[in-house]
Image (tube, rainbow, N blue to C red; front, side):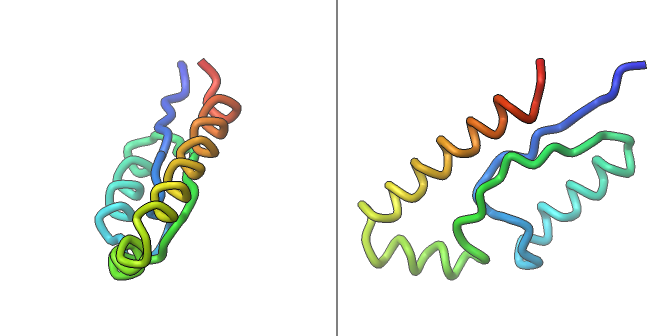
Length: 81
């Protein structure tokens, strides 16, 4: 039987502030899925994310773009087809 995998992709990280993410991850694991993390945490919670955006949209956008490039590379190397 083939193993079922789910790629967790995003910038939220594994902070306790993101309760919904943790609940979904636990439910997927309980259902027998193997989680592959392709995440690049940029902030610990929503307040930090909003604060970064207020400081300068250009700097935040560049960080966000670089994070997505890193996540795409992780996906390519961690999640075989």
